[in-house]
Length: 218
Image (tube, rainbow, N blue to C red; front, side, top):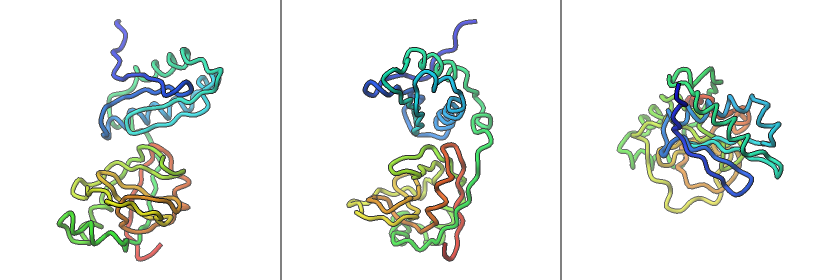
């Protein structure tokens, strides 16, 4: 039987990080493939024994970070074996992910602006934002900041022309085709729809599912 055809490319970022890119654009199937490999490899002690100290998924790629004695040739072989045996069915790729329901006080300062930009009522913006089950594609920007896939295309709006210097912790926001929650006070250029409890973000991992629910206050 001929070897499986590679559907990814590999490249180094510096001399301590090796990446596998599984797609050229953000999409649910690509993220599920990245996350499936991430979960499987994270549970495999072989990479740690070879010198890998961290695995980090992104929308389209998986990065392995290693120390100065990392055996990158062996690491490549381990990850390549995993990637060439990924399942094709979306349900199998998704696995049994944890599900998090976050109550949101939808009184964010940008909610009226989002309604105006999208041509929707405020109530319809909230309805559409709470209707989706979001895939946690990656954690980044700040510790515990979840980048969520699944935003209704009707809610896609440009980022703020001038980012805020201080976005409050727990702000639920959208920018472009993405939505997420700010875990701490930080700069940010997304539109704030409402507020939730930032402490809930500490238990969210890549590959989990997040659902927003409207609440009078959090």
